[in-house]
Structures are given as structure tokens and as C-alpha cells.
Length: 289
Image (cartoon, helix red, strand yellow):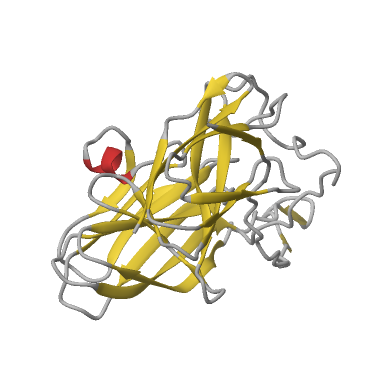
């Protein structure tokens, strides 16, 4: 058992657009009255603006595997996700809250789907309304018996351009987060870098185990949620408990207390749990093959 502490905030960077809404006014006469009087200036309608957050993001999925991608803190609006692929396989799309950490829970209905598209049409498209200070997880599932490749896009439609983010003190990572206390902790794989230095998407097998390979570098992360399901302020940084009897991982240090970083040395299985302010996450299982 290895206990390590780590920290990171995944923040989605959005470009700010500025626009000026003009309005016109005019005066009019009042028949039989003393003279011209002012005519109220109508309030111009709010324009809907769609902003692309992610575009042409590629994926490759083996048969009966799933991948995920988080969308962090999008503004309030209507989020749309579309997935397309040239092959003849069956690709499905689901969107859940970030509190859902395993795709097997999505399929079993243990995680509420904010949207899903599991038909046969192309592209698969999901739209839903967002709320402030939330992270959403996109799940792409290959139900086919063949390997499938494609790409996805994420956009959001808001009432007017997306405003510039409000600066927060650089030395206070808790600034801007909802109040605690922490009532739930979610652990997940943040990124996987292959032996050639390139990053790849994260996949699960049919048993819900995250797939790793010897020679890769993996980073795990945690998210703390309050009773309302919002990312919230915390008191103590995460502590990670690793079960790794076959010495699959070589754990590295990290300057970010939320991040648990490790090299994948050999084949085998591991289990990892995170604890923040005394609240334990579910056990994350991974297999190196």
C-alpha cells in the first residue's frame, strides 16, 4: 500500500469575444397633442451565439471499449456534442455529470445521463442545458465488433458572447469554488502519455478497468464535490492509497498535490483510491496489458 498526496485544477480555457449591440430610437408626434413626444427605445433582442469549445477531436476505439473526455466549467447555455465516424460500426454517445467515474455505471443506469444518443444515425448528437460551475463527462462507446475511428466536436450556445473569465488570486486555488464541506470524491485518469511521447485517450474494458500499457506515463486526478454536486472548497489535499502487488507502477513525485503521477513498468492490475477531507472515492481499477 502506498500513500501519496497530489493536486490539480482542471480549468477549461475559453476565448472571450466582444460585441456591441446597437439600438435605434426615434421621436413621434401625438395627433392633437401639444407637440412631438419621445418614443420609448425598444430593447434589442439578445442574440444567441454558438462558440466551439472543442473541434475535430480524434478518437480510436477498439471493439466494446469506451473513452471519456471532461468539459470543465462551460458557461450557462445549451451544450451540444456531435460524434462522427466513417466506418460502419455502432458508436454511441452519453453525457453525464463528472461525478460518474465508470462507464459500466452509465450502461447500468447507476449514473443519470444528461443526454444520450444510442441510435444508428450519423452523427450522434446530444444537446442539454448547462449550469454554472459544473464539469461534464462525455462518453463515447464502440458497440461494434470492429475497431472504429472518428472525431467529435463540442459547442455551446449562449445569450450573447462568452464573457472573459473573472481573474482569481493565483495563490488561492479554492477561490471561485462552491463552499464545502466535501461530501463526495471522484477519482479518474487525467492523462496517458505513450512511450513515444504522444498523449492518447483513456479507455475502459468490459469489466470497467482502465487500460494501460508498459512504457506509458499515467496521471490520476481527483475532484471534490459538495452535497449539491458542485466542485467545492476543501481543507486537506488528497491522499492516494495504491494497491499494486505486482509493482506495475513506479510512482513519481508531483508539485501539484491533486495529481498522482506514475510510470507503467509491467503488466498487471492496480487499484487506486483517493481521500479528501476524510471522504473516500470509489476504487479505480486499471490493468496494464
